[in-house]
Length: 201
Image 1: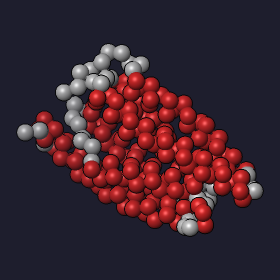
Image 2: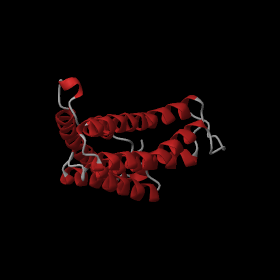
Image 3: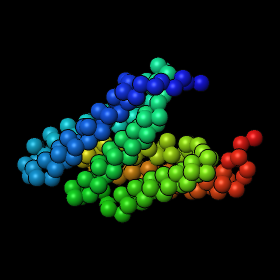
Image 4: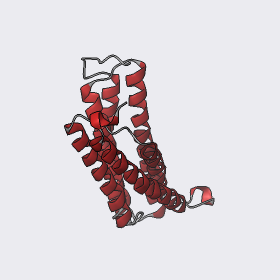
């Protein structure tokens, strides 16, 4: 079991805070893509922005790894990590809509699922019960990150293939996993709320 560290400003939490701090820069870069009409310049900013997003998405795994390795689990870390994750994906997906790189309805489904699941987990927590992280949910996050990165890149690197097409294909997988994980969380919510002591044996 990890030992809770009382120092909230540790290395894992710093990584999470850096992720939050760089989100506005990511948004500004996406705006630059929107206002840039020259094809080469548009492609340049698309690739750079996709690279930044991919690095920020990877820090979500990094801070969790550091917290476990150095036993620096804190209450603040448990709060800031999922918040940073949701802020990053929300900003990225919403900003891709005016770029016409993602259908708005798909963003609504993805973000709506996240809000619903967060709501279910908060209700369960208020009753002293916990809904474990779903395997569906972890897979959904991974595929959404890959799809978002590809959709940001958008163009045809070395004229080999379409990053946009790749992103849309992966996004459909993420969407299916999102709906599946939402159903799974709803099932778990019903179980922990109807069984005594959160269904623990």
